[in-house]
Length: 89
Image (cartoon, rainbow, N blue to C red):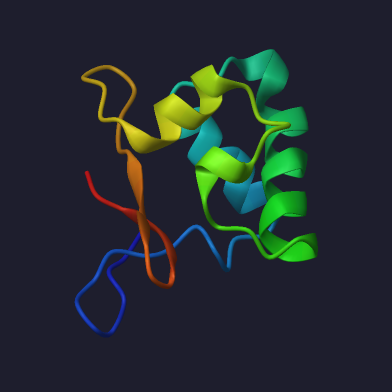
């Protein structure tokens, strides 16, 4: 994913379902759960307007941790920011 025009890494906000599924697969979400989790994440971001992963109670804690914490074999991670979730690694 390219950096934004402000030099920051892109937010999860702005991804469609396929984009969110790609992000989840990239960070190590089990393949059989990627579609469900991307739909859950999409719902929280676009229907409820929530960007705090801690508040996304329908997402399993393991998924939320994978999104927030860097893992050597899982690829990039994402962290909360004022404008949404930013890629940090």
